[in-house]
Image (cartoon, rainbow, N blue to C red; front, side, top):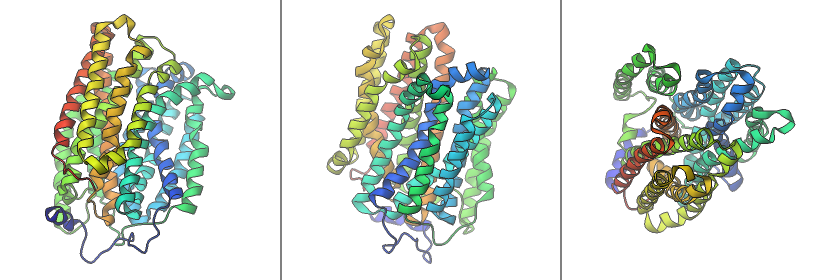
Amino acid sequence: MTQQLTATRPLAPASSTALSSPSLPSLGTAGLVTVLLGAFLPMLDFFIVNVALPTIDHDLAAGPAVLELVAAGYGIAFAVLLVLGGRLGDIFGRRRVFVAGAATFAVTSLACGLAPGAWSLVAARAAQGASAALLIPQVLGTITATTHGARRGRALSVYGAVGGISVVIGQVLGGMLVAADLFGSGWRSVFLLNVPFALLALVLALRFVPESRAERAAEVDIAGTVLLTGTLLALLVPLMEGRAAGWPLWSWVLLALFPVLATAFALVERRAERRGDTPLVPPTLLRIPEMRRGLGIALPYFGGFGGFMFVIAVALQQDLHLGPVAAGWALVPMAVGYFTASLCGPRLIGRFGSRVLTAGAAVQAAGLATLAVTVLADPAGFSPLRIAPGVALAGIGQGLIGTPLFRVVLAKVPTDRAGVGSGVLATSQQSSLALGVATLGSLYLALSPTLGMDHALALCLGIQLLGSFTIFYLTTRLPRSIG
C-alpha cells in the first residue's frame, strides 16, 4: 500500500486540491443514471451502424471504401480526441463539457440521419465521433471525482457492464430498426434514435449531475495533443481503410510513421512533466501499478471483443445469409451472459477480488474454443442455435472481465487527475475496439473467400483465444484486492 501511495504522489502538486473534496455534492442515483446514459449512446453507436451498412450502400451508392469510412470515421475521431476531452473536463468542468457533448452528439446524430449523400454521412459520422469524445471522459471523470469507496467501485462496475452490453445491444437494435423501416426512415432511424435520448441526458445533467473539475487548471498540451492524434491516425487509418483501398503506398507510409510518432509523443510528454508542465498523458500516471496493468489487460480484451463482434456479424450475414434481425438475435445469448455476469460481478469482486478477472478469462477462452470446435465440426450446420452455448460462455467471460476492469484501472488515480485518467482509459478502450475490428475483420474478409467461412472464422477465434490466455496471465499479476 505504501508503494502504491508513493507512486501516485507526483500526479498531484502539494499546493493543489481537487474540487471533489468531501464538501462537493456526491453523485446520486439519478446523476449516475444520467451519466451512464451519456456513456451508453456513444458506445452503442460504435457498432449499431454495422448491420445498417448494406442498406446505406444500396440507398447512397456508397461503395466499399466509403462504407468503411462511415464506420471508421466515427471510431477514429472518437479515439484520437478522447484524452483531449478528458483534459477539457478537468479545465472547464466535467458537467459543463458533458452538457456540451450531449448537445453536439444530438446535432451530429441528426446530421447523420438526414445526410443526403455518402460523403456528407462520412463527415457527419466523424463529427459525431468527436462529440462522443467529449461525453465519455466526463462520465468516468465524474464518477471518479464525485463518488468514494464502495459506491465508486459499484458505479465503475456498472459503467463496465453498460459498455459491454451496449456493444451487443447495438448489433441487435440496429438490425431491428433497419428491418422495421419506421416511417420509411430505413437506416436513418439508427442515427435519429440518438437525438431525443441525447437531449434527455443534457436536461437531466443540468439537474442531477454535480460539477467537478481540477482546481488547478492546466493549459491544453498542444504538442502532446498533435502528436497523440498523429500517432493514432497513423495506426488506425491504414488498418481500417487499407484493405478497402487495396493497400496503397500511403497506407504503408503511415504505418511506418507510427513508431516514430509514438516515440516522439513519449519523449515530449516526459520532457513536459520534467519542466513542471502538465502533459496530456502524464508519464507518472502510467507508473501507477493498477493503471499500467489494467491498460495491459484492456488492449487484448477490447481488441478481442471488438474483433469478435464484427467477425461474427459478417459471418452470419455475409456467409450464412441471415437477415439483420436474425443476425442480431443470434447474439442475444451473449448479451444475457454478459448482463448476468455483470450483475453478479460486484458481489464476486468483493469476495474474490482480482480472481474474478482470471476466472472470466478462463470462461471466455472456453466459449471461444467451443465456437471454434462448432464451426469446424459442422460448417454447414453453423447456425444461431448451434453457436448459442459458445456465444453465451464468451459473454459470461467478457462480463466477468469488463465489469471490474474500470475499477482496477482507476482505483488509485488521484481525484484531480480523474479527467485525464479517464481519457487515457477511454482512448485505450476505443482504440483497441477499432484495432480489433480492423485487424481481425480485415483478416477474416481476406481469408474467407479462399479458406472458406469455417477455417477463416476458426483462425480468428484462435487469435482471440491467445488474447484470452494473455488476459489470464496478466490478471494473475494484479493485487488480489480491488479497491
